[in-house]
Image 1: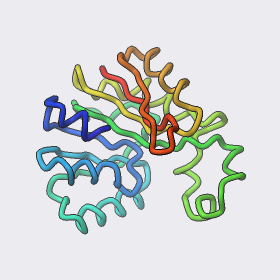
Image 2: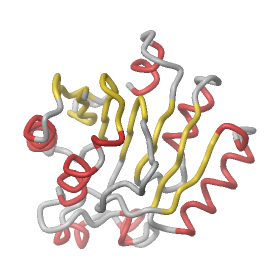
Image 3: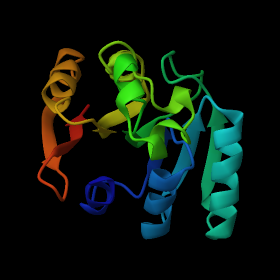
Image 4: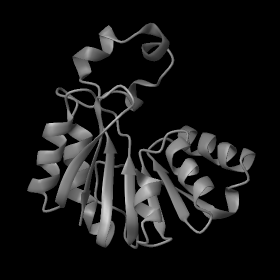
Length: 181
């Protein structure tokens, strides 16, 4: 969806991958669209270092930047403007972490999973704080957990974003929620 948005003649642009983790989403965008500059942002220095190594392995280091920041806070001064912000934030409800498959629960850092009591804490914070870093006409796109799409779409609309819609994954689950500034 991110690549399609940028290819639709919008802008070659600047992309922020917020809660970037290993950088896989932002790096995939940078690889597919050589004219795009991507900023990978995460609260974890370890995640930033992993994304730095992944960028180097894939020959993308010159087009990718890095920023240590907390997605639940306002953007640092002089961040943006971006044509697109993508985010796969922690979205598992705190109590549900205990029920996750061991392959996830035992190997992913807790901070990369825990989205608060209802799993929506990061979405609330990002739609409150980060649209200011978007250009007019720019988009915010989230990956969401199962059965979270309607609530995230509502949060985006309440924040003043428009054209909020969902995109199904390959299993027919609403997996991406996107809106435009």
